[in-house]
Length: 40
Image 1 (tube, helix red, strand yellow):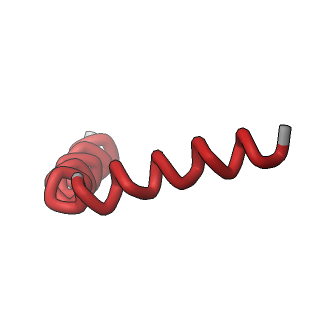
Image 2 (cartoon, helix red, strand yellow):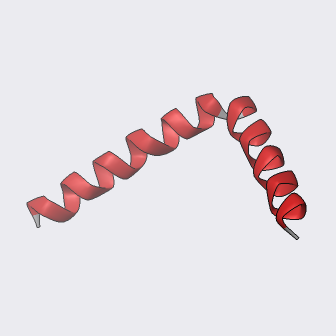
């Protein structure tokens, strides 16, 4: 069971490493969204 979880965690980390550029864009979007929420 634990090994299965670790397997999925590794796959997720591999995806995150590949999609680091996407995650940066996503973080920027989230920050802008939070700012717009605060302004309202």
